[in-house]
Image (cartoon, rainbow, N blue to C red; front, side):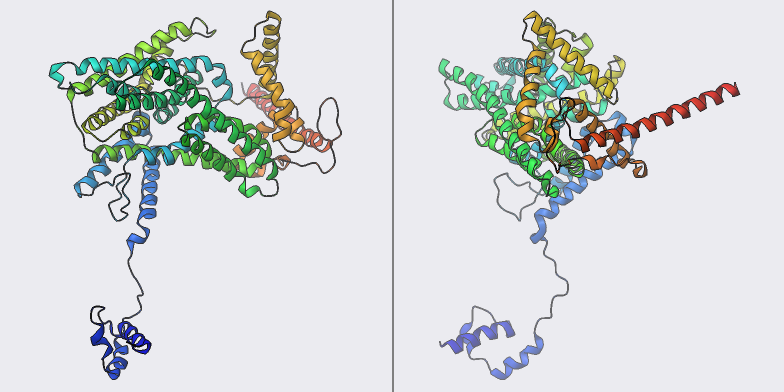
Length: 623
């Protein structure tokens, strides 16, 4: 077997298509036959089919396209969108798609399966949900969180989120253990720790479901921030209780030291998540100082720093949701002062689009997973779970509101309590936590009960909350634009209340808010905001934001011809050192641009007044 014979063998395999199993016969072929066989060589493939090569990205794109088409069709038909919440329709779509997949005998892969050739029927497992679908929704909610109503109602939100979630978990867990002791239920093998673990999973209000429903009914700002804030902040309590009871159920014994360590763990998880988010938020704001020459990468820093904050918190089993919220809240004011108008628009709309697609996929995947997964149906367990979730929510809201109203200036009325209790929707977070349980029959029964509660809250409560809001005449959100006049009076009242607190010797909410504003103005703005915007007066900064919003609204409406040349004033870097003045502390070029803005708006006001006067005179003459 010489090298010459070896090369001849390979050549024969290529030209004649001979078998690898018969090399001896190939080496003794006639050379004339070999030359003639080149005529019968396989033709060049003009068109070929290889679906496995693009299977995963193709199916991911197909599912996103399906989700977007469903969302588009939902909003095209106003009658459907007025009666049925969008989340309900998407779950129904998921149920239909899951039924089709099951009818075709397609099996959904496990979350740990590495077989890429298996069917890619989407299952809402914990890894897909927590790492890819949940972060965009929480980032959008945290980045655009209304800071003022959130901080003003922080005490009420924390009471509902911490004390309310603890009450729901222990009440549901304890009562479910009592139900399991009934002989007719045939649930004697379910112990107390397993019931408490189930109670910790099912007790948390889901932010995705709350956002999906409350955004459609346009509830007033107070009720929206109470329920939504509770759904965001109860994540730390849920995570701690889940890991605590899971650890206890495996060991079987609970000591006093373990309970105390669980309390410490709650503070570590919540405060640690906030600390991680603040660190990444400051890093993102500081990085945005130096992006004036590379505007195209500004949005990427916002998304990457936020996602890194979430992942870093999850590495240490801290609250990723708290980390994302803290990162968005800290980063936003400084980043918006540094980045360009185009980058701001990109961040806003890409974040909204990303969260909308994730929310849509979550509800579709939830429907598909309901059809795909095995179920253990126990009527007693399921019915009592739904009933106890409702009872514990109502009792918790009424009891906690009775205590909260003793300290609130604006009391929560009976209608407000009803909406807060009725808006405690469960969603995909509970399903994903149940998916993390150890594989056994008890896990399947828990998942079946969790899915039933999710469907009940999303369908029954989600579909009836709009007519109930209209029936009870609950105040709805008023779309109003803030003005300079309102901002001046708001700041005046803040300073006035801060002074009253100082005179009374009471260090309340306004006192600490004033301290934080002073620290922000003295140190944080100078470190994190580039150019003369760090020393810009607050009213001028607010006026600049109003002009930015007006420019965006004009651009969206297509009235670009009326767009004033005010966008160019964004992120102006002074070429000469700024000359310090007492009032106001701004550069000459900046002051000239502000005069132009005021002159342009004054002309608009005069035109509106003159047109209104002429129309009034004309109407008087006609009459």
